[in-house]
Figure (spheres, rainbow, N blue to C red):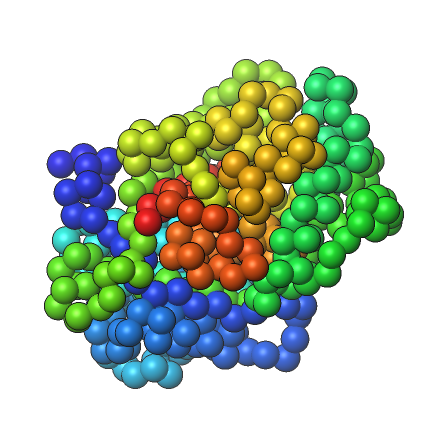
Length: 382
């Protein structure tokens, strides 16, 4: 049986979700952050800790050995615990590993968790690889994406204001999300103030804070055995992970990788991009939302900016894009981010997103990229 058939042969469901609000760095321990999210997810699922058979913790900043000291506070049950580090896609990868464990038949109930606290610098390993880089570290991330924004605007005749509409939309969505780090409506004037690099401004760049997100995954057997509420279970019908290949000169690596990974996920799920009702993407910088919406096939190259301006990607539009507020407003605490996206999509498909609710949402996608470059995409169905 191929990996692509596993989810079809042995379905995997999200049965519980939990979050610790994303926030600026504080004195709160990572243990408290993580346990808040896990306890909420267990309660939401109606599952006891003793019923969980395995745990995956996505984290990029904490260092080694974080899982057991945290999760043992719930009870020393002796279950296997694995830390997953995959840069910004660490949490997404913990969900992917949990899906694989259940779909392969190894477990019936699995915890996928993401938790992080910022430290001084991100400590990315590529900078210590001993391999010469032509730009020598001079191009920091926000400058890199400012250059991509400049190229996009020049190529497609898009204005600064149209790119900034991404941030206006996402800050508006974040203002409706009690778990978001940024919960304030921002005007176009607000967003265009405080330039950082090129056309990118502070509010078009995500905040990197702290927080936690957790999901409880279960098989059909697990749902039946534990007597869980199947009507609130959301099925994961696609799970794809890729790393970058070799691309032609001038090709945007993250967008190309997103296109490939998204295609794998759509194929496994048996749906088309136009079928999506909800989409959470890695919008660490405003321009990324435009690039990834196009790379995933929701529209043609150069069309995303005008569609956002028209309300096509608003809550209540054709497809709610980053209804949580995205990384720009919800925040990007690294380890939890990808799990938090799955939490938001699950909430939307259950019809429990309150003022952020996309009407009649039945299909959703969570997308993350990370240094490497890596990409992880999940497709969920009501």
